[in-house]
Image 1 (tube, rainbow, N blue to C red):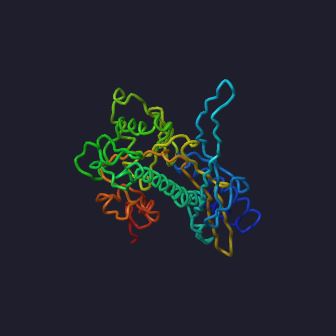
Image 2 (cartoon, rainbow, N blue to C red; image 1 turned 45 degrees about the vertical axis):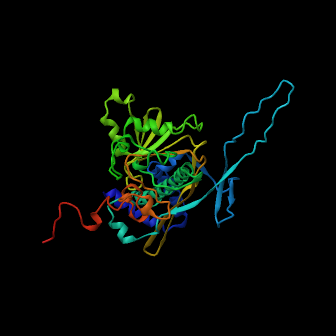
Image 3 (spheres, helix red, strand yellow; image 1 turned 90 degrees about the vertical axis):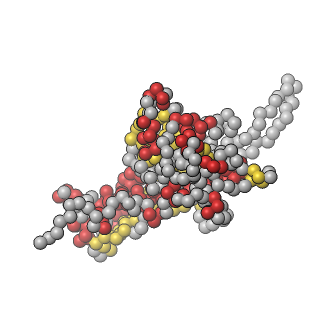
Length: 382
């Protein structure tokens, strides 16, 4: 504990030296970046690309005062038969491009007096890393899941034709057979439930097979990755090995766990307030599905004025899905969570809020109540 106190004191004093503060800020940025790499699941799920501000694919946006990252999509040219005379039915190969808007995710500006820092018994860098995980990593995950959900809902609407017109509709167990499973599939247990609600049922091997088969040869897409909650993956362990047909091999990270099952990588997260229980998303490799872009990685700023220290961390990043059918969603409940309609009461079933991500201001709100005075044992000074 004494070492921690001495470190915090030395850290605070060094931030008052401009030369030392610059070096410490750079070192802290690398340290926090490593921490975020093993806590945020979105970059691992989509595939991370780190670029610099002078990257030639960074261009000014036409719609807003920011930058966009432009990437080339895989060409969709058809093969042309070449005859023995050298003539062919040629086709111009055009490199279609997608612009990914960048956004900034930042922590609040932290302020602490030098005297308070002396009193801390927790390493100040550990505190900053934990705060960065919530303020940066969690918000990034929340944004990327929102992008995925938008893509999925758009494809569901395109696949549901009423009088040859794409129509937005509720998707619950009662709608099976009427509303096609274009980008969303219901789990086996949910399909057999007689009511539409949000009771999360066990994940079955057949559910993963159904999600994988929704793409495959028809779309020339190979699903290779999935993301789901630890609680849902744990239900697979209820099956015997001869029922599963596959062992679950795991590699543990902080914030998520990498599993191999049925030939696909399953990224398992503990962030149940962002990825809610009963939801799983399947994607392919990033060349065909999506990409997560980071500009320079995590940035750290700190300075000392008088007896006060100021800190802030931020990242500039963006994400995009490159194939309209590159994401498949598996729902282990029978209700509808379609919030894209003009009237939520028509497209969502009662209680849908438990199946969608919590708002940003509520992330982590139930994790620790000690600051509110809820802990044990409680003692009082005489």
